[in-house]
Length: 322
Image 1: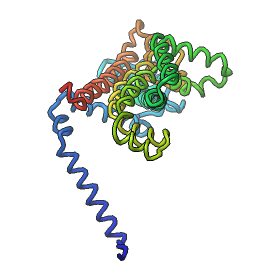
Image 2: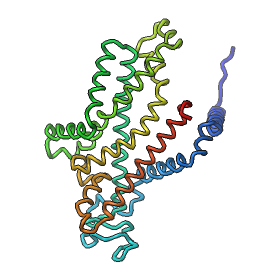
Image 3: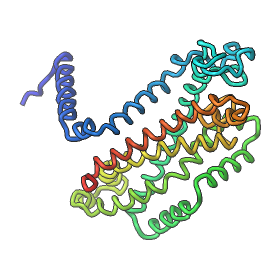
Image 4: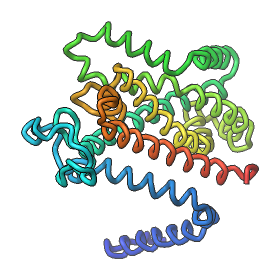
């Protein structure tokens, strides 16, 4: 039988047809229909998409470069929003005590907060899924050690543990390098306080999956445990993990903001939303309410949007909750 040879144009045409078919299948699915039926999900998704867009292109959207000292002047300090008497149209949301534009600070801070929150959730997912699959697949002493360690971690308050990790890191790392390692410290601290939920969920799902016929058939055919876990179990336990990650992202961003607000998070020269709230809170009673209100409002909208979207995904992807 002669092998068939396709030209490059025919290959591109087939690939395009396949992508169009998959897109039409997805757009006509119940998932998309349920999405458009939920006004809260549409609003939350729109807010998340707008926030992510502003974060990705913050360096181009921001009216001023807050990292360039020549872009702000002390004579422009403590200006209120432009619609209030004394405001300046150059600074829509006012300025802080250093003359920096609040809107630009929020956009740059949003970028840093989302990067730290996203990477910490990714690290927690990788750690939790790995330990959960190992615990559920092997059982025995492996299961006991991992789950008892997870139970011990769950008994420690999140903020207390993140403060502990941050304090230990600040003792070990020289002071002149703390600012450079601050994002990694926050990512590690938040990830270490969030992996337990993933591990417990994945463990339960792994116990169900390893008794399925296709897993047993792979074991009989000589498949290695690593191959079975990566090829058969992990892909089938990721749906609830993705829903949990959406919910966890809002919590991670709030945790980073709390750490920065307490002064053990991002340094002032790398402003996150928590850092901005912390700095603005010091001048709140002097009448500069805009330095706290706008960053705090953005943080609330960001966290609420991810939580609403995560709740909708949980209810939609779990038929029992519909």
